[in-house]
Length: 381
Ligand SMILES: [Zn+2]
Image (cartoon, rainbow, N blue to C red; front, side):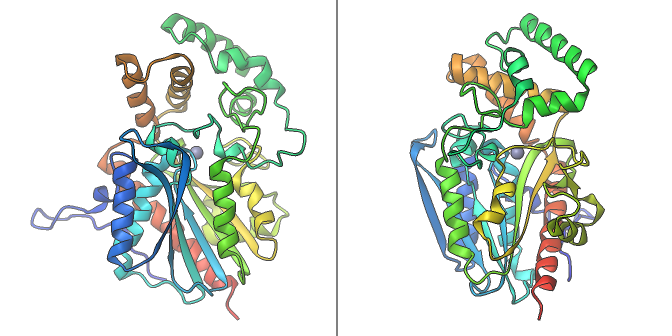
């Protein structure tokens, strides 16, 4: 299948690359670009209103769905943005670009593409990684009727991970203790302690929640709406904040003997990494969307994947997250400090630079094309 990457300018007479224009400055602009691009193609939009909040300018928070192709197609590709709110700039840009360049694209007849724009619209609009409940949506897909996964290391380090004092001296002291822990237990152990998810502290980081959130229920509805008749279902869920600048690592959570592991390797090549066995930049996580998806569509082969793009060094991402959590709990959004923390958080998950956007678009489209090709081949008679 042909690949359509961004057009590089080779001389000054050519028009500038359109790629940066796919990306937006905030949630509202992103939503408008997405809706306009869908309308220009005469595609229907299904909008789910999140009743638990508004945007900063007082309008509604929506998850918008656009379906491209034959609804009866046996293979379905879901492309999703903003699972982690503030990370939505990246995935939204690729979704808008995908619609804007549709005229040059042929999608095989046996594949339907479903764009899920801003599954966590609150986090996107308010520049938070979490949702309106301070919940990390990608830790929220556990069975809430069962006993929650325990995270003993988080318990041990919780005051250091989510400090109530973010002054320079206090953060320095906390960081020194975290470094001691990493030296004693290993850097991977520290990463797991912080990021694998915890279910005990509503005011902590990477909190998985105590109920299925609105975004969780909405995602399940979306899958229930599209799964009938599907024999193959894939998810490309766009994330940012881990790995080298502009590089996109496909992350899966399957063990090597799982058929889905083989499918992902066949479709995406060796760049795909599993969190099982420590191949990936990510720790193995609790309560993820990818992990829960096979049960949502039991009659289909499910190949769920997070496409994780690097932004800034991980210590900067971590610092921004801790400050934002402090701001949410103890600070004043409408203050000099509040605005500076928000700017720091946005920059940690969205390098608002043309070179980064070009890299995101090229890699995002490459991976989407690989998923489409893989799905098409897997359901051919
Ligand atoms: Zn993420």
